[in-house]
Length: 358
Image (tube, rainbow, N blue to C red; front, side, top):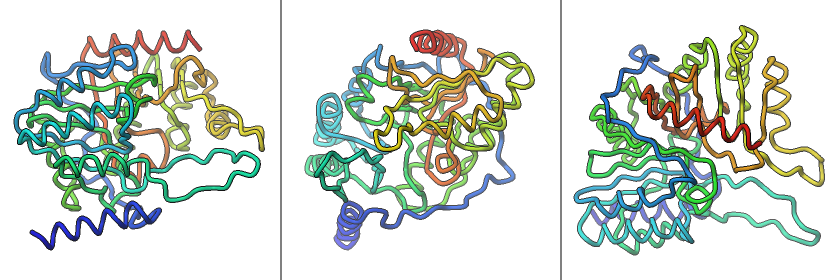
């Protein structure tokens, strides 16, 4: 046991200090048992949290109500303002005897910003470091992300092996209070069982091929399942995603637009780089326009961090996957396919509001 703890401590030290250490791409392919049609969830198995409107109190309440176990797997987890509430709640449950495990990305990528005159670049600043230290000091079991994936970008939480939260948000102040985000509350036993198997595999750095037909999992099946959803659209496609840059996704969106489907894509708005005059979505715009997708919006009214695709106001994907090659093929990501009428209606209304707000 002591040897294992020492290994974990060494792994964390290396992960926090060495940018890119151990972060290798993988070529895991969907197997023959991959399915691209979701089974129906039972009535009441799913519900939806819409952020920022609904706030993060339900997430806090879920943590505070845990009796046996909590598993969190996420990309960025800060320890200030709203996110500090989650850190405190996890520590309190651990100290109350609940088994709390957290997997955090070892080297989260922070997009570079232009340097001010005379400003020197800084390196090796891991935004998860303070949270890792606070959680470990409070008795939470924390582990760096598996080196099997380029990044662990998944955003999930499972409470007492009974309720899962499949989210688009990081546990950050902006994710909890200002961004456009969604969280699916999932009580489906099959989904829960699969999420726990995946968490265990990633905790132990083992390989596991997901089998549940509802879950959208990178790097295993997300590309196939998201393309299947896009191709299923006959009347409309509404996409809300921070980044859309994958050529194959753009091609399939374009094919639907050329077939007469009303395709709308909302992405995050970024200020132009004063040095180049371009923003980080310029290539995405050119790519999508080149495929015939011309209804694009870079939201200024709200930070678009959600990852959601709504087909024909009847079927939807919600999860952590951006529409980028890295997200679909190399990262650990998690999403879910949804046909619940109440959730679909809420997604449609929210997306329409965001589109109108510009």
